[in-house]
Image (tube, rainbow, N blue to C red):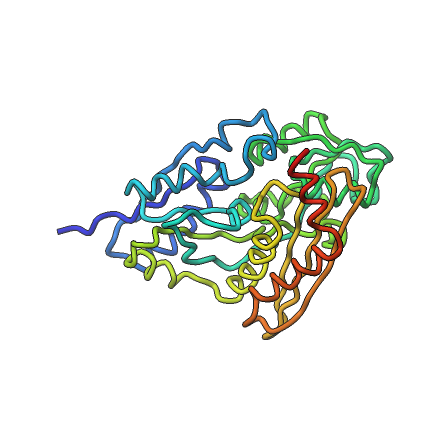
Length: 309
């Protein structure tokens, strides 16, 4: 009797399908005797490209339908970009593994200009990320930043058609799609600190599906896991939301972890930043410690203002 297929719920975007197929290839090597299939699903976040994510419920809209597929038994696991995963998963679900992190930084793409410093006064930038908008405007208050939704190819087409002087995308997505040649410049983290979980592929399962969980944990990359624990602890302690201009980035140096965080007003008028360092084994504690430091500087006031706008 043939074993049942292992089904992977995924969004239908080109990048999401690449990520799901990447996980599928790893699983086929791990369990060659069992078929692995993709279950592409159209999510609300993909269908509504007119409204900003902040106004329609945040990045969690990219994973809700995938979790429904898990709950209904139409898939055994779901593959996500970790920057889209809310700080707190619904009851009954668990993050079973993360793969090794790709370059987590942001990339500037431009036809005319060769660097962020080269952008002229009042240059028009495309980005729907409140995190990017906040940091870019803080560094350059003269910039005009407008929402830019759609998949990677759609955003690049809008740049080519002259709608923007430059756009900002994640380096990881461009590299995974073989589009890194289109990167004009990689933004230093001093200019744009990455999103929590950016560049990381995560795998979610049902809590009660111990067989799948045990299988998936074999794909986990421990150094990336420690970094994600710290970043997500920071996110959870501050808001748990994906619709605030919050950046968090953890780096490992041996057994030591450094975590940096930023939060600010979308118009860039205020930016709060702090960092902590300590043993990587205490990653979640470090995340909560950094949140406390940022709250002491007024991060809570900023977050409440953004949430109520």
